[in-house]
Image (cartoon, rainbow, N blue to C red; front, side, top):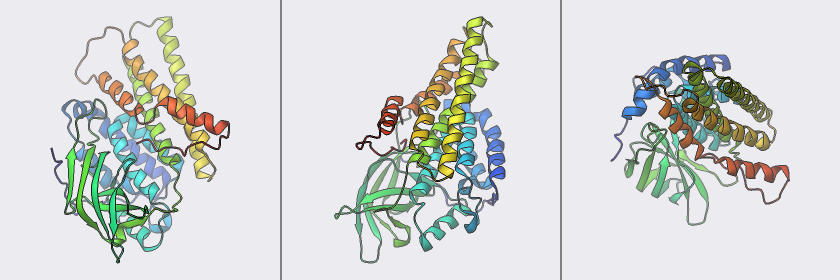
Length: 369
């Protein structure tokens, strides 16, 4: 099934967020609005069009635009907290934001007129969907435009974004990132099979047939400095947000208050607090411009672990409590399990071990897509 095209944003007044505090307050307000309907959206696979429009009106897509270009230029610490807050309300929405931010991280080193064009789109409320690993064929012309052919799969938020970030490689093995408008001629966005968890992310398959992208939207990635550490950290923050929501659900629906139950809840809270501390530590390291791979990997392992433990506890500790309207324990469990597949704990532990032993063969930290 082809995902219906979305209309360009022309009639939504976009608020301009000015500071870190305002950005985080905005995320908290939106999360409070999104949380009550998350279970219904999941159960009926009702895609979050209204919720994403609310994010547009609130200006949340543009919080990373530097202050010198008119944005809030929020810190990594603030952005990590935003992901954690939204994920506690609806992890699918947080995952859509992650695909958007991943695009911006890839283009962080783009300069000059291209960067200004990008920031202008963000401040007008546009948002992006980022393709995962993989490339399509790109054929540059003499004027710098790029003609694209190929397919990309599991593009999170493809059905919602105004722009699709498509990695391409030409015959000379040069790499590019092309920003393709959602209504480009020759582009088809096909809805993929509904996943077990994160059901409203609207991941899609992109099929590009002779899609021409103007030179101003083609970014040369050869030699571009890009670390996937920030995106990996934000993915860990999504785990932490899901864990916090599950633990809160456990406290609100306890079974018999046995010593074992009380001890388990206490242990989960300790693990969650430790995970959140590691998140803040890694975010501060990134803000300081330090090599943060070890800190990010530690946060990713612990946040992923507590997310799975907390959602399991929703069932184990509640006892034989009958389901009631609005009960979304199964959604919490499925979302956490689905998200864990993007960055398996064993992979993160192996990468952490490579860095702790300072092995020259250590592979670059992989973004969680």
